[in-house]
Image (cartoon, rainbow, N blue to C red; front, side):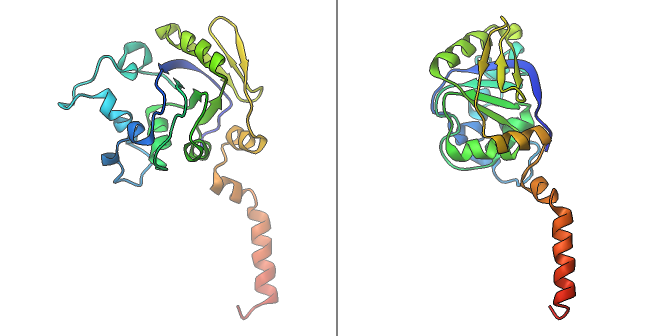
Length: 201
């Protein structure tokens, strides 16, 4: 998993509440178990018309936000079904951080397991971030995980909380497999001891 330390990037404003996982990645894209390629289907029903043409009004189709790596979103982001394809699609598109006032629990947990940093802020802080993000190409935010701080284009800062274990995992690029591999020496020692003490097993 790619490490998350400090990210300076364009922030795209999605001022909508209750954006569910079917909106993030519609069901027709769930046939794959691969984590790559899903960016093409991210927010597909909002990004594209029925004929496949881009919807010019959708935020990620606007020139300033095409390369956005931060999403500033409304309350209760990631609600609905528990599909892990939702963070896969965000990450494949290039989104590394989502900021909102609240997230659905399963989506929130899945973000950490896939290298995306979900940040919870207050309603007043979110409004300020929406103002920043609506500046288009000038809407650059810096998210510093080490010091747990968001820095805006005007120099303002917002502190955020994060569970220490999850912070450790993101800073070091550790998913569940990576955490297990950190104990590879201890696991090997146990297996050797077990093989010696129980050769019949």
